Image (cartoon, rainbow, N blue to C red; front, top):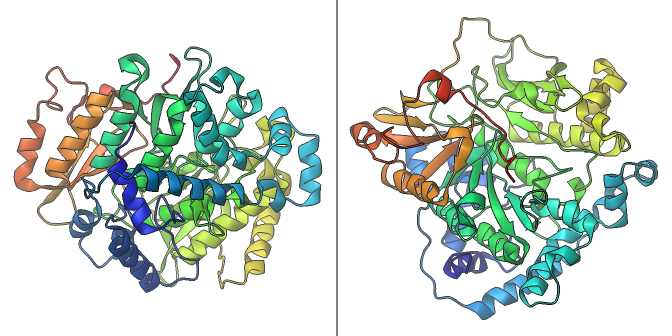
Length: 532
């Protein structure tokens, strides 16, 4: 078995409709108290707490306490029940099969451009990418039962549609094996999840069965075979994670501050924003499942980052949407300046530009702003030339002022009370960006964060388990990823810091991972995977 069935029953106990891989976040108008009640109710129902929601809305509660209460290292023990799991899987497939298509949200003009668009657009038009949510289970079953091989999967499914379940075929050097990309809002994982990654890839050997931390605070498992995909997906969902809508023409992982909730210089706790935006994109409210057709047919990939301090650990300047915290010059109320259009590609490297927009730092405003930008991008973005299908090209087509007017018009049509103001002046006081590696004091007295180098983000199954053990021992099972492809253990007791640094898996003596690397070694970042 790829995953422990007892963990999967946790989800069944919560809801046969499989309400989320990340806990359902209310509509944008919901109050903080509603979000808090939602988290509490689900925790009571499922006996498994979300690793991210309660801590990010209870700003008046000590971060270390909420972290400990809401990050579970071990699942509660349930008896294996294959029949019940198969029944749930069947119900899940029914829900996915009954979903509307992504193309059903597109206006006629956009559909006409799809028909004349790139090969990828024509493939999406011929077969809706959302079909992968069901097809991946069928492919896995048929391959296991000898009814087909992976080579018989239609090319458009193999190379395009399966990316909607996060499966990217690595056919050049590892034919028949896939990279499976996840969704990890704000880069926060726990020990149980890390051990599951190790269990999932270990069977493929040390050369191909590895795990990557990405430059979007995300996790990727390499070597996955199609016949194992359904069990891996089920195991992720049982652990409040998903791989759905993580690749190709989808909104990628939500990047936030790795110091969220523990930073003495924090301006905004990025966790609630990453979570609500993740739900906006991937949660289908009609069925309560992951995989949202409303945003399932974008012109190209789309990146969103939320910064929590002047350090900009989220690297907002290279994202399509960058939310940079900034107080209002008159009222002092905290909000976000919006920067747009940053990206890197073969043809062009673009630094984000000032959108001339600022919104209050509340969930409704941020969610609504991003939804409006996505709607205009989805319906009006380039569909023929994929090199010109990123947001920056659409902004340049409009011009910044006209684009701003278009987005405000869209926001006003939602009638949610969101007000867009002009960009607010940034703080000008001297500031030096801080280091994420090594030992640093948190805003909580007596607690420390410890950043650990993971060279180019590559982890073996053994190293995944070693990190899980360290987190379980020292940081309430919480592990935070950074865009530099390293990890951070938060909420380490002051008395435990020397013990952690002396751990043989990170002490720098014949170890890849280390807490105090040199400047050069500690600064290396790489998009790994050429060998696959």
